Length: 148
Image (cartoon, rainbow, N blue to C red; front, side, top):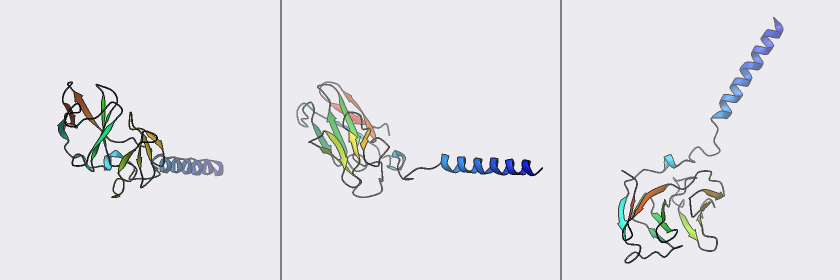
């Protein structure tokens, strides 16, 4: 009978430890879900007025939550990212910029770096990628949107 109580106690303790660790996150605010989802729906002319060369980028500070970075991969492919860093998006300083020396996106507040091609974290505390927006290019106009 004593052994059964011992094993029951061990089993309960094991279940409690597993359940509490399963829900752990090193930063509970570390999620794109905490970046407000604002409507994004605008057009630019990357070949003329809003010229962006292949391998170049441009900031659109009046779009998105804290601005959008549009990066031109090549003649026809673009990426558009929210400038708000997903690590701690409530901080006013949590805004990414292009680091020209490494072609990464960096948040100088938490020092997280992100790949400019796909927005994935490269270094720093962020484990989440940058929030991205859809892009459609018809050869003249680039449509940037999120479906809202």
